[in-house]
Each structure stands twice: as C-alpha cells, then as structure tokens.
Amino acid sequence: MKLDPLNIVLNQELKLNKKFYFISGNEKSFIEKIKTKIIEKYRVSENISTSSIDSINDYVDGGGLFEDKKIISINNSTKIDERDLNKLRNSSDIFVFSHENSAKIKKIKNVFLKDKDSYLLDCYELDKNSKIKIMNKFIQSSSLNIQDDIYWFIVEKIDNKYASLEDDLNKIFSLEQKDISLFNIKKLLAIDSSGKERVFFNLFKKNKDIIELYREKIITMSDVNELYYYCKFFCQLIIDCKDEEDYQKKIPIYLFREKSFLVDVYRKYNSNKKKMLLRLLVVTEKILRKESNLSLIFGLRFLLNVKKITVS
Image (cartoon, rainbow, N blue to C red; front, side, top):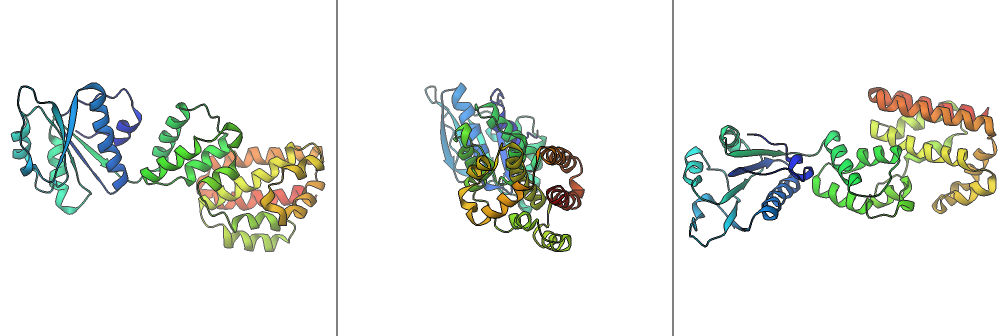
C-alpha cells in the first residue's frame, strides 16, 4: 500500500499499524526524516527499542518472552523479495527499509506496494502544494500572524529539500511577531536579492530603459514575485506614512544610497495618488496569483503603472 510521506510528518493522529515500511525516492533528507518520524510514532505508543542492520541477512529474531519489540532499520534493501517478507511476518518486530531510487529497486518497490502489511513511501523534492501544507502546519503550531505577501514569498523561496526547508521554517517561526517583515525574511533565508530591486530604483528613467532593465533582470515567475514584493514594500511605505519625516524614519538603513531617490518618489504623492497606488497593488496581486503563466507581462505592466502614477 502506498502512503503519502507528508502524512507521517503532518498528521499527529496518524496510527501506524504495518509490519513493513519501505522508504525510497531521490531526496535523502526527506527519507531520513520519514524514517525518524516512523520510529518516533511507535515510541510514543509502545515500549519499543531500535536497531540498525546492513541487510536482512543480519537479522536475528530475539523472540524471547522478556524481549522488547524492536524497530529494525535495514540499510541495504536491494535483494528483498516476497519470500524474505514472508520469513519475517511471524516476528514481533517492525521493519523499516530505505533505499534511494535506482533501476535495481523498481521490482522491490512493487513487492511492498502489493503487500497488505506494508507501506511504500516515496520521498521526492517538495512541490509548491507540499510546501504550503508544511507552512500551514507551522502556522497552526505557532502564534505568529504572517501577512499574505510574506506567506507567498516564503512558499516561493523556501528550499525544496526537506531538511533545509524545516531548518529555515524553524528560524522564521522563532522570530518575534514584530520582526516578521519581508526584509528580515530575506536576510534570514540568505536570499541574494542584489540586482532585481535595481529595476525599481530606475523608475524615473525612460520606459524604454526600464523595459530593457526589466528583461535583463526579471526572467522567471519567481523573479516577478520577488520584484513585486520589493515594489510593494516601497509602495506600502508611501501609502502608510503620514508625512515625509515619518517616511524617512522608516526607510531601511541599508538603503542609505537610495534614500534621496526614495524621498523624491514620496514627494510626488498626495492622498489621491496614494489611493491609486493602493488599488494598483490590490489588482496586481490578484492577477499574479490567478494568471501565473502571464506573470512576466503583468510584472512589467505593474512597474510601468507605478511609474505612471508617480510622475503624473
């Protein structure tokens, strides 16, 4: 029987009741995480010890009256077949097999897939939906309130490998609520943001120059999202600040070279233009989520519209 490995990680109530677990895939850290979680789940409910052996040939059934049940972790699973499983069925022990994907284990995986007393778990790099599920689990377990734009930025930028993803999320969710900002998240995740924000800082140039720079720096959907969140930060700063003094205080210190440019941008805004800018942000965010395949086009259109509002 096949089981989604994310169920092992995310579902605290999941009861494991199989004799055999075969964990495979191409993502080593996820394989190790699932192996660890399986052992933890059994330890919570039973008095159980663990043992690790290289191959099934090294297994010796304790079988005594006073022996604890064991979880046996088997590292080399290349020669397992149905006869081997049948020899182990009468043992009280639980068996966890793990092996990275290869041509050699295709038939072996099929043995576990058909076996009613087995779970087959395939561990691959995480896709976007999987990262969303893990993010939501972290949020449910914490008291942090994460804004939508930061949420989607994390989902987009967080690593696809489980160990790195979990490590980064632990860092993020150890922050205080007041420290949850896009710039702090970028710093925490060590995201190299050099270059893309330059597009915004060329807002006063001719449209032709902006378009050329945009096409040079913004290549993928991730690039569009990153640029959008930069722009949104600066736009939101303009919208929220009541006056220039307040605005200057909130400009991040590391942007000291761009401070005069940002102040010049702010001076071009009145209450009416701030409302126009807010409407543009709302509309653009909806479009980018619904029309991700057209994000490169809409990203450029957004940037040019910000310029249009600013200089009008």
